[in-house]
Image (cartoon, rainbow, N blue to C red; front, side, top):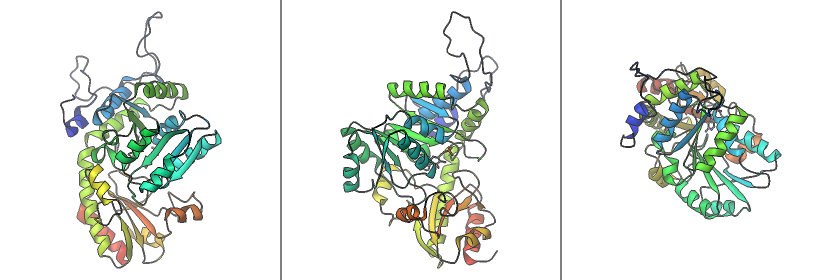
Amino acid sequence: MSGMRFDTRLVHGGRRPSAGTGDVVPPIHVSTTYERRAQDEPRYFYGRGENPTREELEECLAGLERAPFATVFSSGQAAAATLLSLVRPGQCVVSTDDVYAGTDGLFDLAARQGVRVRYADLTTPEGIAAALAEPDLALVWIETPTNPLLTVVDVAEVSRRAHERGARVVVDNTFASPVLQQPLALGADVSLYSTTKSIAGHADVLGGALVYRDADLHAAVRAYRTTAGNVPGALDCFLVRRGLHTLSLRVHRQVATARVLVERLRASPVVGAVHYPGLPEHPQHAVVKAQMSAPGAIVSFDYLGGPAERLLDRFTLFTCGVSLGGVHSLVECPALMTHRPLSAEARARRGIGESLIRLSVGIEDPQDLAEDLSRALAGGT
Ligand SMILES: *Cc1c(COP(=O)(O)O)cnc(C)c1O
């Protein structure tokens, strides 16, 4: 297992010897209870604790980052909430200021429990220094690339500085996936995933995961999950595990198409700024090159040709909808959709204007997608 390269681990990771039947695809264990002898302490005793199908997914995810531990959850939010539950009242969480909107919501809940939450610009040395000077710093929360502006944070640098302060570093690695970015290898302590997105990849299952090395953290995370019950069911774990087989194929295809679409956007007279980590003029392009193997398949841009909703209506292949990373290409307007719950001032502070459009590039034929984009921008159908 450990000798296998990444794409092989996607296919074979977590696979256990079949119980005599020769199954290439492991059976799905749906049982919620297990026969036992009363006096024993079996590994499997109730479905809210351990389940073999769940464990196979966890072993595969851990192996992708060469980590000893992974724990999966019923959603990305459940994974994030579990990690935040370990921060005590009075302790501080410092976060990148352009985080997933659901993460903002979890920070609000943590703040109500007495956790101090501070947002910071972690893209500059001064921003990092100021943020990490907070007393009682427990956790540094990095999302990179960010949503929807694709800002990039230097994971190695922030991790090094956070560890000097004794704080733990989590990277929400949902956008990049372990194919493009490996936070633990860069020095972070925890990789967080919404497996709902590229990992499962087919827009048909919710899930989340934490991947890490620390055994004490593992004990705390498992104790919380077993008690809180935010576990994924076996059928969901099966779907996420099945998605992993093709993760690398899908992501590389999506990145190649994204590069084509970015060129179309840059050539269009009705497009202003294009946000994409693969562009040489991206503000953190050097960091992108150092920590990502490719720039991903999420692109955002300013549409200057009229109201955003008119543009969205003109797409025929890109589906107007939230979420990302799946096989279907999606288009959305953050101000109207994913980031609507934020106040207009909060959006303005983050640079999310009414004309910002976000694409999540799927696996359809690249030429079809490019034509759909060009037609929508040109105003015809
Ligand atoms: C979707 C998403 C989440 C939340 O995951 P769910 O599976 O929807 O609960 C967290 N972070 C990022 C970056 C996401 O895109």
